[in-house]
Length: 82
Image (cartoon, rainbow, N blue to C red; front, side, top):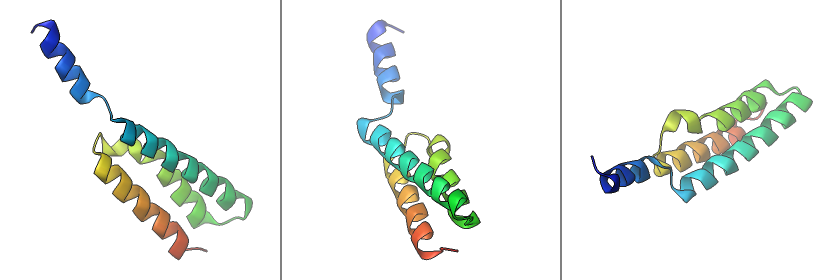
């Protein structure tokens, strides 16, 4: 494998800037939800916050799935309050 092929393979494995932005955004929202749930003793909000912080590690590098799952978890937090 020459250097140019190696660089193209490595470039394909790197996450896009949109993915990195989404992971950071949902991580911050998840951390805020976790802190709020812990402060107000709302278990569901706290655990949804934990899920928002850590689900990007399970998604892989699919940006659309990252935003869909993050939006779904945020909607769950809004509609299923304790």
